Image (cartoon, rainbow over all chains, first blue to last red; front, side, top):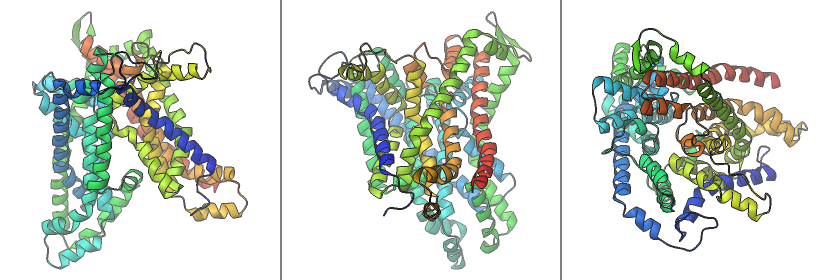
Length: 267
Length: 308
C-alpha cells in the first residue's frame, strides 16, 4: 500500500546503493579468502580452500574462539541473573533512589569502554586481583548489563497489567504470578537482550586489550595479532569463518528464538 | 520518554495489587540491589579513581609524584603532539557524524515507511555489519583502502584516476570505517522516530499542496529530529572514544585519544597521564550524551512546534 510517506523511487535507489556499499566490505574478505596466491591482490586469482584449512587447524584460533564463546555465555548468564530482577524492580516497584539506580544501570552505555577497562585494570592491580578470567567476566558483565535491562524493561512495559492482577485475584502469590504470567510474556525480550549481551561480549576488543592475559586470550585479540603477523589470505579466511558464524547467529535468532529483528531494533 | 512511561505505569500496581507500600519499597530495593552493588563496585568506583588519580598524581623524570596537580592536563594541552591528537579526535568524530546523516536518511525512510519486503531486506543489510567483529570490519577496509587494494584497482580499471593515492593510514580511512561501523546506530533511532509519524499528517500536507521536498522539510525532518539527535550523539561519542578502527586503519599517522591512552599506559607506563586522557574521553562522551539529549532535544521540540 502506497501512502504519502512511502519513500520515492529515488529514495529507494539511494537506499539500495548505500546498502550495497555497506555490504561490499563484508564480501571482499570472502572473495580474497579463496584466492590461490600467497599475497593479497585484486582481482583474486585461482581457487583454493587451503587458507580455511590452515585457519581451522590452527590451535590458537580454535582455542581463542572457544574461549570467547564460553566467556560470552558466562557473561550472558550473569547479566540475566542480576539484570532480570533489576528490570522487574525498576518497572514494578516504587522506592527511593529509583531514578539514580536506573541511571547507574544504564550508564555503562555512555561511558567509553576503553576507560571502563582501564579503570578496572588499575583497580585490580591495587586490590591484587590477578585472575584474568574473573576480570574479563566482571568487565564484560558491566558493559553488557544495560543492553539486557533495557530490552527487558521495554518488554515489561508491554505486558498488560490486567493479566498479572487476574492471577493475583485468583490466588497466585508474587513468585507464581511472575513465573506463570509475567515471565512467558517477557521471554522474547529476555532472549533479545541475551543475544545483545553475547554479541557485545564476543565482539569486545577494547576492554579485553587491558584485561586479557596469555592463557585467557579472546578471539578479537587473536585476530588482531594474526593481522599484524601475516600478510597472506589466512586472515581473510578467519573473516570468512566469522561472517559465516554471524549468518548462523542471525538464523538462530530469527528461526529458533523466533525474535523478529525489525521489532526489536526499531522499538 | 520510556523512563517516564515506565515510572508512570509503575505507580498503579501498588494500589491495585493490594501490596503494602512498605513491602513494595523493600522488594524493589532487594531486586535492584545486586545489579546496583555490582556496578558501584566494579564500574563507578574504579572510574572515579581514574579521574581522581589524574588530578592527584603525575610523573616527573620517571618519578611518580603525589599531590594535587593540573600537570597532566597542561601537558595534554600544551604539548603540540598531544593536543594535535585531541583536535584530530574531535575532527574525525565530527566528520563521521556529519557524513552519516545524509546516508542514514534514505535508509531510515525505507526501513520505516518502505514496502514490507524491501524494508526487511534493508534492515538485515543495515544491521549486518553490527554482527561482524569490529576487528574484521577494520581488516576489510584495510583490504579496500591499501595500495593495490580494491579501491585503487577499481579506479585504475575504470580509468578514473591514473595513479590513485592509497587512503590507508590517513584520517579519511578512519572516518570512512567509523561511518561504516557506527551507521546502524544512527539509522535505527532515526527509523524509529520516522515510523511514528502518522501517514494522515503527511496526507493532509499533500492535500494542501505540499510537494515531496516540502513534505520532507516540513514534516519528516522536524519530526525525526529526536531520533537524529540520538544518532548523532551515538556516532560522535563512539567515534571519539574508539580504539580499534584508528589503530588498524590510522596506524601511526592518524592516532586518536584512545590509542594515546594505550601508548601512555602500556608502553610508557605513565598511568597518571593516561588517566588524564581517559578523563578527557569520559568528559567528551558524557557531555555529548547529556548535552545533546537533555538540552538540544528540548530545543528541537520547541522548533518543531514553531514549524507547525
